[in-house]
Structures are given as C-alpha cells and as structure tokens.
Length: 218
Image (tube, rainbow, N blue to C red; front, side, top):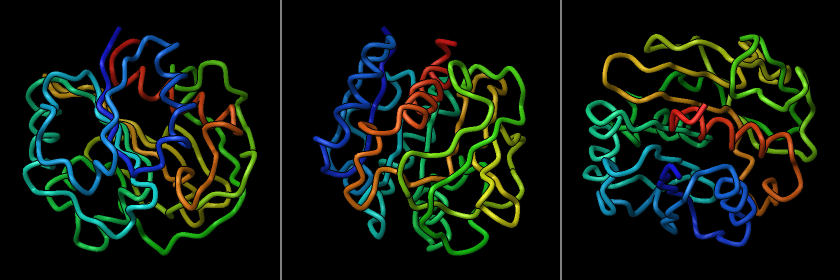
C-alpha cells in the first residue's frame, strides 16, 4: 500500500466514502481533521507518498506556515505527490497559502460559482481518466473556481465547460527531477455539506485516480 496524508475539514462522515475508496485502491489514508487550518508539520509529510488538500468548509482559514513548508519540502525533495481541490486557488487569491502557492498549477482568475459541472478529457489516455467516460456531468451542483492559464510547467488534463473563460477543470504536472507529481482540480465538491464522495461516482473515481497517479501507483 501507498500512504496518503489527507488534510481537510472536520466533516469525517462525508469524507469516509472517499477514504474507503482510496483504501480499496491501495492507498492507506491518514486523515487529519481540520488539517488545512491546523497542520503544522506533524505527521511528517515526507513519510507519505501523496498529500491531499481538500479545503471543504475551511474556506477562510489559513494553514500554519510550518505545515505549508513541510508539504512543499516533501514535494520538492522527497517526491511526495500533491492533490488539491478548491479552495486552493481561492486561498492563494486571498493571500493565504503563501508558501503552498508555489505548488499551484493555475490561479483563480474570477470569483467562483455553484453549478452542475461538465468535465471533458483533453489529454487523451491519461491514467487519471481510467474508468471514466470522456465527458461526464456531475451528479450534484458544486462550487468551483474559474482558473487561469496553467503555470509551473503544467498541462490541462480536462476542461470544465461551465468554467469560463478558460474552462479549466483539472490541471496536472508530471514529476520533474526528484519532485512529486501535482494535480489541481477546480471543484470544491466537498463543501457546504455536499455528500459528493457518496453520490458522485465519476468525481470520486477521478479523485481516487488523481491520488493514485500522484502517489506513482499508476
């Protein structure tokens, strides 16, 4: 099994279906409640294959600098992958996550909105899309950020039709040298009490695949 460090809010019941799916796919997950607001470097990010950042309901809470630095160092020097959903780009736009911001693959260009979303693969045959239709519509409405042109050598994996003007849904960056793979996803499906991991199989499959890819399992 590979090891994941999941930093999110305190909605453990809503996260459990995702944690179960990760376990079934070969990822043992250590979940830190409220970790996106409290993580200060323990447990050590360097001992994990991937760090998962799901802000959820901690939209206005910054992470301690020591925790941000621990994640960046693990990614840059230990090959630890990083998977981010929103509100990653939103945090950076509000001058939070100022150390983590160097891992961002795309910045928020406009305020977000809430809608059902249409994701369409454009980077054909990428492992993150294993088991997914080329285009799918989310089962529920969810928050999303409008993202800009990818940076840090990243590529657009999938479009989000509703996410004008750039229509960016998922951005990826492969490993460069010794650093870890990075995935940035535009939706904030896990926020506002959404049961996204229980009710939307495609979104959950995409997330599990993203974690497996970042952990170099696929």
